[in-house]
Length: 181
Image (spheres, rainbow, N blue to C red):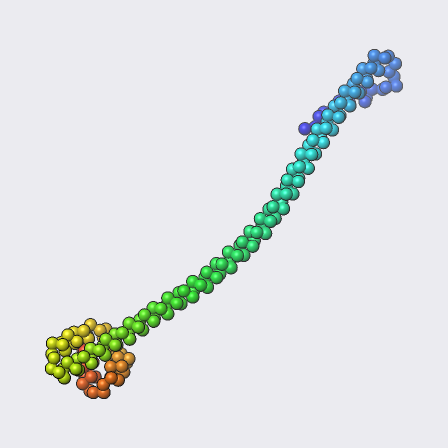
């Protein structure tokens, strides 16, 4: 805070002073003015030191902020790359899930065809041995197989490949007929 300085003695004409008391009074006023100016300068110097200190603090903070800004930019880049990679991985996982689902369906289909093949073979054997109870059990098992599998080309090819008799085809179609009803 600047100190107000009185300049009333500077307006005085020192050359006209002839009385010692007036000279002493002027000197005292000048001395007082000098003390006020010194105090004002001291205050300004203190403020300058505080301003320099504040500026140095701001410079230090600015360099820290610049470093934080740089680090934040690098972090943002890293996060963006991680997000992109996560999206790619997520897409791959979705593809794998679809493929796994298809593979499970294919395995289930093949297992059902194998079950049909077992039932038809067992049914043929049971009928030849006249074991009608066993044949009924196998026929019941075969009717639980999905009709689309019973009528499918894989079932027809696989079941027909183990026996070339028309009885086998007839049994398959009979089982398919029972499965529809």
